[in-house]
Length: 249
Ligand code: NAP
Image (cartoon, rainbow, N blue to C red; front, side, top):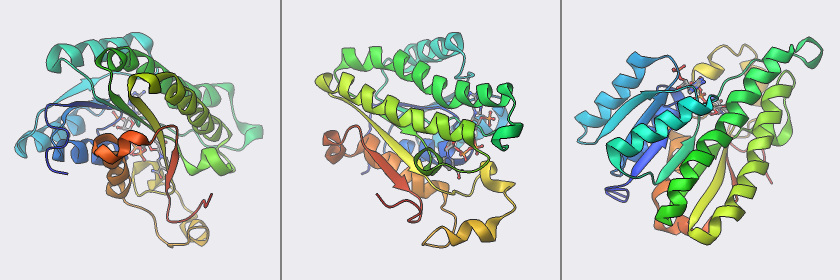
């Protein structure tokens, strides 16, 4: 896959840490110039940029809250000014505000919907204008098994992640005539900061046939395939799980 994305540009939202970081490094590995988006971890984002540059690639860090339309537009503008095109968008930034339904405050609901669903809409809308003109592009949206099967304590998160799936299928249909694909990657339990605080690990492992958490690089491998491989040009509107067998369709 070496060089498959040479001269191509990828924006990975929330790529200062976790799955986004692994995706940024994997796409840089196949030659893409990377926009490393982050919300507040400027040091970590800069480290990702430094790692890409040290490996002979090109990257910039860009702070933007992707739930804010103005900040998203500024990020897309800066990416175009720096690199002149956008070929891949990975909508990865996400948060959780877990609590049971009866205790969930409207602000817990709204914060999760704003970033995990509205943020995906804002970034996709902004980037699709450019991809439609280019007549090519790959959009990869990160959902979750919670969006497919529900998860107690995650009504807000499950709703947002299920929303991402419906959104992606519509985008896939709207953009297909111009050669732009849109797919969903739905991870299960992946070892990142997001799952670092979970206490009921033994209980969780009972539901994972492969009986372990996944690694960010294992999700990034599928993202790289969808973003870079010529064979992925005929895949659109699909939901693919990287979950150790938790959800079997
Ligand atoms: P993580 O380690 O908590 O990292 C979250 C990333 O999102 C960070 O880079 C963070 O930036 C960024 N971010 C947070 N708020 C943002 C905002 N308002 N605007 C832009 N960026 C923002 O998360 P992760 O576990 O890698 O998860 C990545 C994605 O996979 C999420 O969509 C998550 O829902 C999904 N997912 C994760 C798992 C899992 O088990 N880990 C399972 C299924 C789905 P800062 O560093 O600046 O805060």
